[in-house]
Image (cartoon, rainbow, N blue to C red; front, side):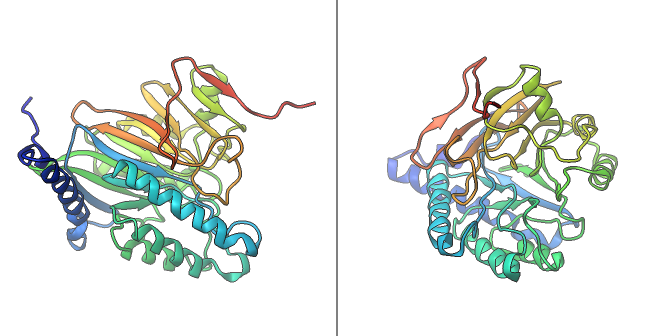
Length: 339
């Protein structure tokens, strides 16, 4: 297989030049979606500079404006600072935001709060995508679809498909497709028939073969199964809440070439397990306003994907720079014991 050269390798004459190359790569990646107007509905494209080390930062459950009104400013500032530090530490090629950004439509303020949060994400200066969480409610979801689609640096393309869309990953030099990210709207009940029909249509119209990663908010039923079977490693602080998802989605995702799924929703869980060659991974809850910080420190999930060899690996990252991944066989149960 021919070697993929990076812009950085052409500019190694000095440390300063290398730094400039890294910034240039990020700027070029950020411009990759500028051709969005010519895309088909529900599809975004992202050119990635390093197909063998494509960097994704997943943040989830931001929970801005949580709790009492008097605590909003403090909690929001802490969450924004966490987001900035995480992005600065890993310089992701893509930021995946997997839901629960604002609290329902409390006080009738859902839309202005959503727009405030979008501005905070835009300010991070990296390409980003979004999947809806169960708390992300609006009086008119068309307003939300439009706002996320038109946001700066956004790859959101779910306006015409109820929040379900894909991001095609393109090689930096040749421009051919080397992978795809599937983004699902799990609403309040988890993946249901509507999302499954959308997936089936995707599999029919775009059969591949193609390496895919899936991102969504509410976990599949198999997340509970892998912990109970002893296959999962990491930390569990609460029982997995797949809501009304019945477990039938997993086989469909696997048949489509999905090698890993990443979710949020359960703030006190940070574990993963492999089932039939598919890695099921909990994201690290990010927002200061959400519960679970006393069990698992807030942070993000840093994912590195080798699109050529079709594998991925991840670590959990906190804003102070600490990185964690469970050791083989490491299972930490922090659930409250019943009396």
